[in-house]
Image (cartoon, rainbow, N blue to C red; front, side, top):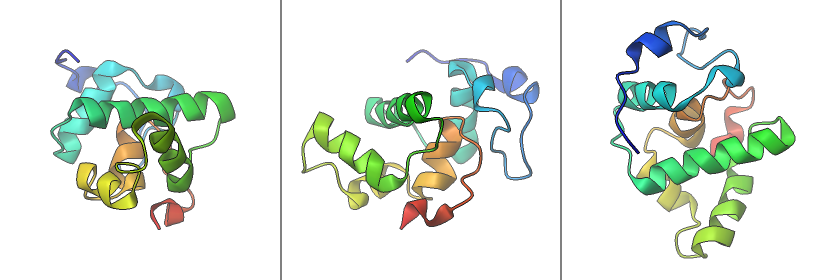
Length: 116
């Protein structure tokens, strides 16, 4: 993915007190890059694929996917070796909801048990 100067885009969208987007429809690549910068995660292709999987699932269901649903999607794409909570936390050490969902432009999940 290309780099964006995205702070201006991020400043124009509504966010809650923890930095989650209020409306997932406001999300775009520039905002994703800005949110990734804020979380301090250096995004690899695998990080971005997780973000895409979250967005794809949300587009289909209009619900933030729970971690176990994301793991199912990862397993079908990458196989069982990398479709683990451990691997997900290696990519997003502060947590699935706290960083992956935030970068994907989701509202703050009401049930942060998404990470358990």
